[in-house]
Length: 436
Ligand code: FCX
Image 1: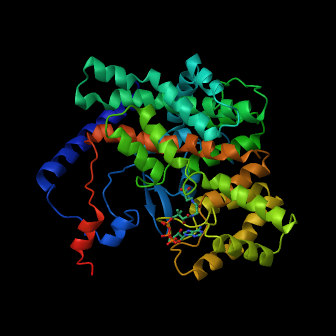
Image 2: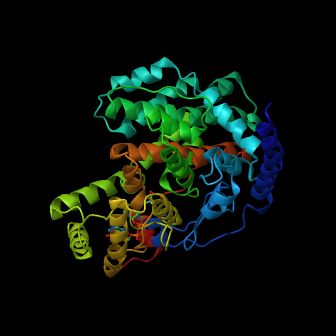
Image 3: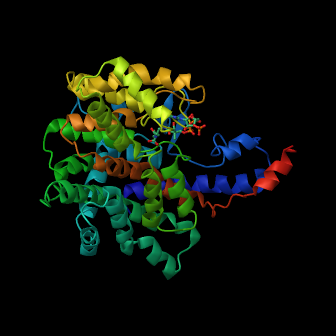
């Protein structure tokens, strides 16, 4: 058994005992009052999930196991001193709650490179059976499901595994799945946008560096960007659609592939991960309509107002939890200013940032008028030459695997049961509040 699995057992066993005691001895204690408005507006603020990988503060943004993104940029092992942290380190942190050493990170890099080697050929056959113009998220998710033929969890379950050991084949499946996602994502990218000229994995490279390499980008800068991108999109607490869907489906003891696939179906929605692609549609449509590469703030203002007047959302702005500018936006903007000070798209993103919040505030209903992670990520990728924006949500998905699948291992360690909240019909709610 490798040292990471040993560590998981050491930390996981006492935590699972704590969860059992909490249920048995404290289970009838109320923790919160829930009002009707919360139920009818997406359960916002209803505390009902147990998540250890990250926590989202409305004002401050995301913390991974207590660490902010700028702190992790300092603390996690890197490839180069001035580079971005390796996402392998973030995975280790989310999994164990401890900062990794460089050796831990190297161990995971090697594991993932090895586990990425033997993807069964039928997975590529299944992708190839889809039309090339099928959205990359369709191809990505189809491949994830096709890989579930490999599920160790299913085999172990059928063989009659003890409940307390569920985490082990889950861990194995999660490691295989995360290892393979860059191969699948880059295969789809090369298939759709680069005439099927595929590039082999380089076992000497790290996970995110390999993704850039297999997509066809050898520049140090693109690899650095990919490491940043893979880190900041990795997790956003347990209640967002991709995390919650993965967790919910996992609660039925569906294997990691089925569970993650559910999360990816959610990520493909325009209000969630597809927003990064839609931001680019919105920007390019604006440039076409205005007929200028460098529109003025007044022109952007008019275009944004027109979007709202048509009953549409401005993609990349707003958030269900955040009430300030998303630190994932800020860290990308700082990255762009450092490495791409003259990029026209980034300058445009800043101009949009100058005008959109006040327009959203003026609606009187938008709870958070500030930019989220998607407001800039596509412009950053585009500025480095990755201009094929239908791939952006796939890249988001590769990264999101780190958080939601780590949490799936913890769901098994905690021994959480099947999830089954109560639903009521409209009459029940009307009656409950004496609706007149
Ligand atoms: N443009 C226009 N209207 C917006 C808006 C935006 N960017 N953000 C919120 N609103 C509207 C809502 O549509 C809602 O209108 P309604 O009352 O007529 O239905 C009202 O403001 C109140 O919504 P609010 O409570 O502020 O926001 P929600 O929690 O319901 O929704 C999202 C949050 C993120 C879905 C919403 O802000 C939105 O649609 N943003 C644009 C899409 C986007 O960028 N999504 C990515 C989010 C995230 F970063 C990610 O998952 O990747």
